[in-house]
Image (cartoon, rainbow, N blue to C red; front, side, top):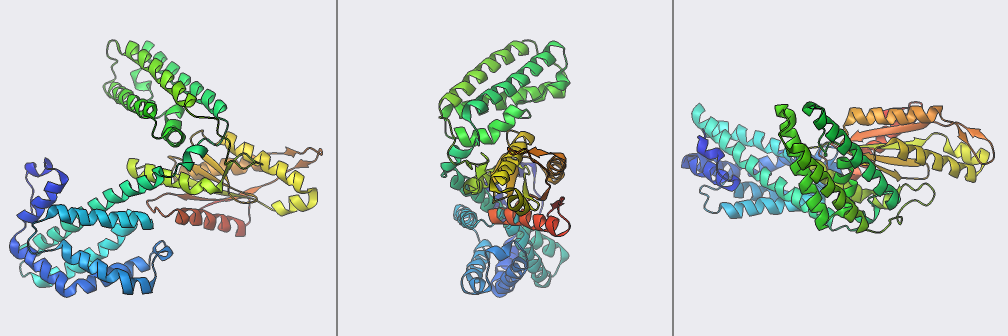
Length: 454
């Protein structure tokens, strides 16, 4: 099955309709016969693959598959391969409903795609027996591939949309998105934006277009994309600010690519900087100082809001094709500190570590007090290697640090850590469990070390 240049210009739903109408009728009828006769075998292949996947074990049970899921999936397969398709909008609507169900159950698109691969393999084996010529077999295999791929496309679109709505309905995230004093955060972001604007104007004055940095790449831009998104979400000024940043960054990208600064751009940028500064001030003035929801001892975020933050980062990662990572840290032999020096000194130690963590990470990252002596860090837009490097810096710094307590005692301590990176599995508990397993391995292999989840 070959597509002409006209195919790429069609809307997605018309592309799907085009594939159906351009496939010979006897090929479509043959696939219909296959799914009617062997659909149950394909469904068994799907769930046999899924049940073996460690992440699927969190929400799948054998009894559930046999009583509820298998029949629904077989009906879906048969609906996907009719002999003649005359209602593509209804077919699309079905895929969207399935995607919304996946979002509510937190079954990730990556996991669904993995299992659907085995349906394709199963159907291909029957296609080879159904059609006599190699040409017909190839046409049928391509038709099967395209139909399932387009179904997955609409499922994933609905999944991302529904998952995003779930997060936006949780208004508690706004109250905890900063994690520290609002006035301090306001001054910090004013400084980071001033630093970016000064550097940008110097590059323009010195005719160094290749050194221009986009706002999105700056600390100010990263903060606005993550913590700012939670704090200002739904505010008109925030949408306007993001639109302005996107427009400026597109121009900067063009300038870096062409290595040439257009006449008058410096004045335009200066005016844009003024407008962005005004918008930023208005946004901060529109919210009150936020301190509720912080751990009273360490001033880190409480785990009550961890799910909301992780949901937000998962949606951001799915939408923007970005990674993010978790670091779960545990103070080694903390019970010994409490037993030997008392709980007040233990509290001073926890405050010292929390302050050190918040001074180490970037302003767009999050620190939670996860347990008694455990801290969890969410590193936004950071992959495995960066997360491991960050965790190792923390471990090394704490190993070398000396805590001078209020009683004059000097304490040393070490931490163990587990690291995991988001890879498309959207069940929140899975991410935290992975970090916890890596931390456990660090503990049992000697402590004072960082281990990545494998």
